[in-house]
Length: 407
Image (cartoon, rainbow, N blue to C red; front, top):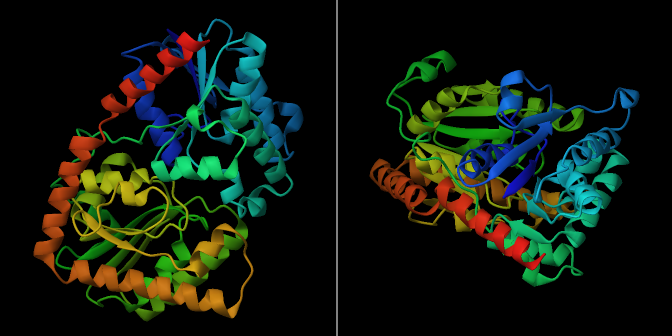
């Protein structure tokens, strides 16, 4: 079976959960199918020999809207997919490539939904009018795809809610995975020393992009009120817009004035350093207001660290409340970040309630080391037993086979 895997992100250019997913899924798929990866960037001779083909936006669109530049990459990908038996796209950045390849080459198109444009209206801040184009591309591809993979049961429900014309029989749940041989407790501490952490004090860790989706402002307000002995480590970069960047910086400066031991790492760290930080964190926190699954929670669990996370989307399918971590309800105001950016008194009250809930959950874990240790051990066990990438790849290939049999 000859499969074309389509993605914007691919190592070394991975900045989000979808890129992590594609990286490890590709590794496992190569053992099962004839795989060709199409992604963004400049290809090296070695990559080409390994079946990795990179594409760049058309130079005529330099300085143009990012959505138009994305479409130019999609057309380049579609034109290079002749000879594939099936194409599999990831995120709106590659969905149009999969759809055009389906029409051009007469092959099935499978797409994995990592998030949905209708549930991310704040992207209009980043893309401007391009948000209408990204939404159109996603809708066109998803409604015509031969199969849609949702990364959680909650995500499947969102897909069917956002796209009611889609036949439910074509939407399949295949959870994200984790490489538990790579993500495992690391006793080393050199990465902690480079950050400047005090080894005798507990610390709360966040790893993620500075976006409204990830709920970073809620976290910065929450940690103002936690145990003053706790340090706070924010591995946070790649702000979506100048506005969210400015908001983050103002809140960070306010937090730094209010308490000591606050560390911001604004760049992407090498994976081994992230694993060390995850291993030694007292608690990992994921305050997302929208999260189809949340691979980063799996990464923390695989490193033996308890998780405090918002009870949204697919997170409850990963973090078992009271056993591997603590789930915090997202009140209506915080969840409205998904729907609009209007400020009102009710939203402010609900946002404050969510922040207080996060603070209480973090303090509960920090204040009970024995329970935290039990949660971390249970999280590692759950990650190993239920979320291996080899199983994810086998389920994906079985779906490919079913689609090809029906074609």
